[in-house]
Image (cartoon, rainbow, N blue to C red; front, side, top):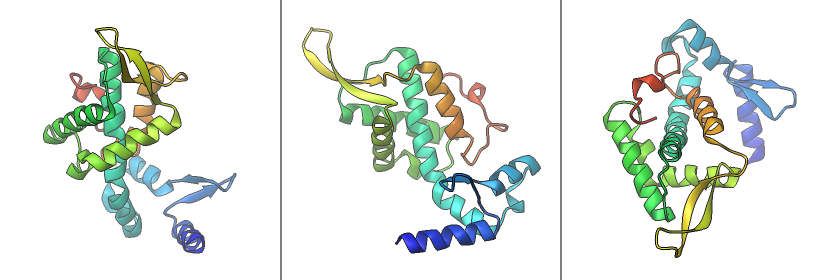
Length: 180
């Protein structure tokens, strides 16, 4: 499996789809950056376009979770258990899909959103803590990780957004201020 992965990476480097930097674990999407500067998908390598079509829905899912978390934490909303949290994020994601801010409907599906939320919990962006509810009873709630605040979360949203199909130069938070 690793041999196949390495040969695929070598092929993509040879075709100019990606570039490898030092240390070798760092990859740059040089065609994405060139296409952003020149302004069109038609200038892309067809292999790169195909790879992006596989990856973009996943990126959209991770972006949707971050934008939902940003909205939740800016509004001071408390999300209690993981099932309820995921249901709220999915409703938020479907709203953005129907408003046309997301290109891939499958990005708003339960499984990719759950995996994205789980990944952000593993990264320490968010965590589940036991807090007292409005009656004083213990309840599990989603909170920002100790190393994050709303401003850092907004920067992370910007970073993930830069890899979305619709680039930040064409779409920004001002396009949907009531959600972000």
